[in-house]
Image 1 (cartoon, rainbow, N blue to C red):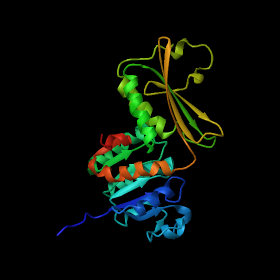
Image 2: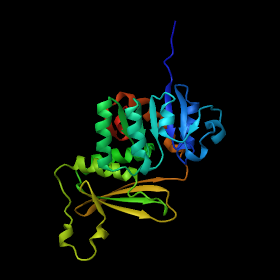
Image 3: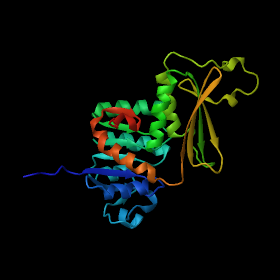
Image 4: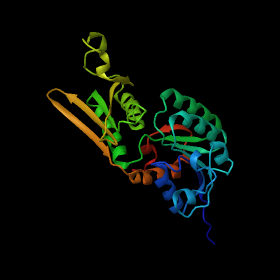
Length: 272
């Protein structure tokens, strides 16, 4: 006689949002996953089905504590930076693994989360971007920076995006800084510049990062490598739909239970 594995019980913070709504539909459609609660203050009191127009009886609640009370294996954080860390810490302390899709959390906040997750024996998979094209850009850039240490990042997004840089670029700067090691850029240090030093961008993990916020962009990142008499440009652009993020987010939900502590980047759980 064959037995089926129990479905992974998922709570989704930001269930009615731009990225959360298509992910909720993906979770409901997946045979190995079960959406047990959604978090969205304005839709609290409804079912996920009523809020999104799908067949799902899971409740929409206002807080992470209410969602976690439903019995959760994986808590997916897709809300806003100011409440994300509170939600994530509550989830690991309640015994859930966590996938973080919310951008804007700092390295210091991730260090705090890592301590809590390791103490609880839970995994936290933080992904700046779930799109396969963005994941490939990260991998290619890590390969390149070992040979081309002169690198700068440009972060593109719509005018109203408040967090700078995006989660994608924040994660990428950390990874490039680590992959580059002791090598450094040949650009002049800030102390030797003339004019406003802010025009050189913010230095993150030793990498200059420039955030562009104008209408016409959704999300994008460009990595510029320079060498003697040559350049390499790697660029990722996202369109107006969140659908490309769903397969990667579902993969993260399925793989996060194999981790302990904070792990950054979807590629960390992708099989070659």
